Image (cartoon, rainbow, N blue to C red; front, top):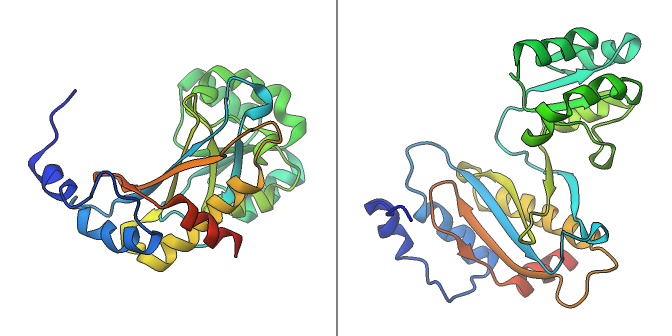
Length: 236
């Protein structure tokens, strides 16, 4: 295991490992334990009481954060005709059909973050599964990236739409802003994400569903939250 740096050890000493902080306490502490010279991303890790190996307990979805992620998202759209024009007018960075698929296949071009496709293009886009799939970029109807409403999809991506999927260990990781956002904006983003996670709880999940919530900055230590307190705020 790599040794933690001196700066990390110094700030992590401020976080009590066994304590479960209230959301407000954690948000107040966050900038105090963020030491990088860049504007660090704020990440949320939610441990769920699900078994992702069972298809009926797979938790995945997407949420448009009220204040975005603080990151510029480059969007490509696979579409033709009027839908291609609609995507361009909505602000897509690249729009195309066969030409775009060929560019990605033959040139290995991947200068984008998210991909959207109209349903009629998926026969063509399916060829890119091995390239886009492992990178989490493959358009998928379950998260709204295979759609005829390309303008809405592009708008949401640009506004700060976050896609998430539970990992093998039952944990959902997602960004909820940047340290510079300040406590209130991060709080609203975080609660929007947790609210959706609660809403899409699989009916087959038994026992405690949200088992733990941890907040951290890119380089900083994790701050464990009082889960019951966060859920109470979501339920308001």
